Length: 150
Image 1 (cartoon, one colour):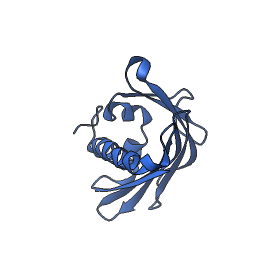
Image 2 (cartoon, one colour; image 1 turned 120 degrees about the horizontal axis):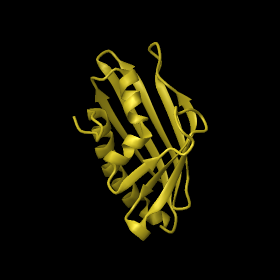
Image 3 (cartoon, helix red, strand yellow; image 1 turned 135 degrees about the horizontal axis):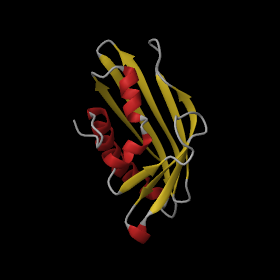
Image 4 (cartoon, helix red, strand yellow; image 1 turned 120 degrees about the vertical axis):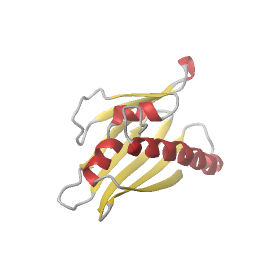
């Protein structure tokens, strides 16, 4: 399984950082060649399913994810979100944690991915590519704006 971890410190209060990184549809604006839908509807809670569709035309695949833990930050407590990836191409888990700090918040994003048809030998390459894509996405989500830009 390919595993990577991204951490960012931001001046944003934990509640705002949480809102930005768990706005699933906005992820589609910051991840290349990806659109995101939330077929179970909002607001997000345990059991919410969202689908990231990545690719072009017939070379696209769906990456359905289900929220299995949902604890928004409150009263100095960290926000914790865990996702199960339930796709036929991408499987695994993700966790997004938002910790309040004296100057804003600390966001920790951990992905554990398995890509069907890729040998485990490719895990370091998958982790490296995932880290690059999701670091850029996280930076843009935290920066703000509808498209992730300041």
